[in-house]
Image (cartoon, rainbow, N blue to C red; front, side):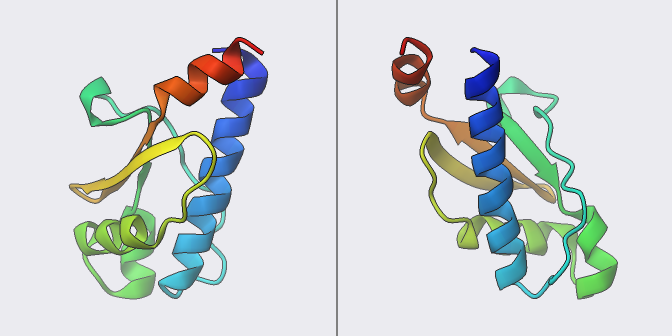
Length: 102
């Protein structure tokens, strides 16, 4: 993937996750810790929900499920999943290929 496409996907992911986090009651999410999951089968980009557990007084697993359900679609997003207190995003490889070849 080219650097500009990676940046576009990360920016889309961050904006979508911020919107979802705000919908579940966190007005200032701070810096989002987005990184590839340790296991590639889990997705292309992940975010831990543990930092919000104390603030929301809920388990990270429940928070991840709520964020995943509230995450809006953005160009290049194929799937959003909650797994063990993390929100994992999978990108649409067709989109990645088309945009990468532009």
